[in-house]
Length: 217
Image (cartoon, rainbow, N blue to C red; front, side):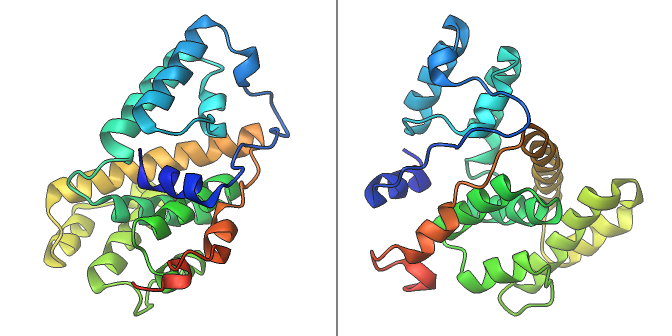
């Protein structure tokens, strides 16, 4: 089970998605046999019993759902060239920039579960890339992420070289580009369907189990 889903289970949270506001998603009770099988595979592979809203959006085109589950398992929700914490940092940063309440909340929550400090989260939410809560290397990485999200046609070799000077390796930079671009797409899908925030960050910060607000970090 992914740690963020384990924590939700321990908190006893009702973290199912409220209805989308723009387009219908594929609810579990309405899923055909193909989608029901994919939902079962998600439960087995990720350890979360209810189906996240973004997957219900993908389920309107079942092959897309299948491939996105594979991308999530192999790239987004796994350590790779980048740690999961850095991937969630990128996901949260892009989602805040794109005004996506669903993704900004869910990945801000994941960032905190993965060990990101409350101060780092606040810096990301405020687009404060000079904050001491972010390392110099993280600040540089997020500047590239911002360019990939807002003006990817302006990304140049010099941007990559600046990151290598800050200690990032090219495979890490490539992975950052993949994650940033994927979440830019996810944000647009979530907003297009009208997925609201699940309120996971608020639930995390008010939980009384001794890990809220950066305690022990």
